Image (cartoon, rainbow, N blue to C red):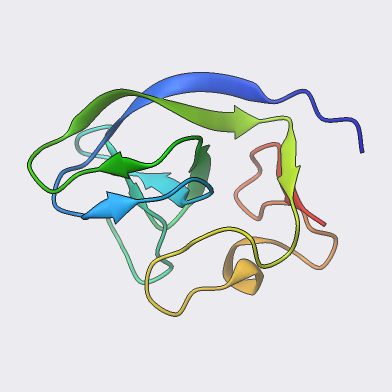
Length: 107
């Protein structure tokens, strides 16, 4: 596949410990900060918005200007990291397209 990832910078919310590359992220509506994607959340972060492009440690505070991928990219099935027991099935349809409508895919 020919990917042309779209990169941005985001603020990762404190208190999540170490998040690794390929962590799927949602946006907390009230703050605009990113946190690990969970279908059980109800604060906006239950919707896929981005994928983390480097490992960050959120233990002692928000991590600002973190590189994230917001579109134009894909990952092999099973390679993204989610909160709890979420899997690709929670966030991608049968064709591998993000259910949230963002231009991110699994294959």
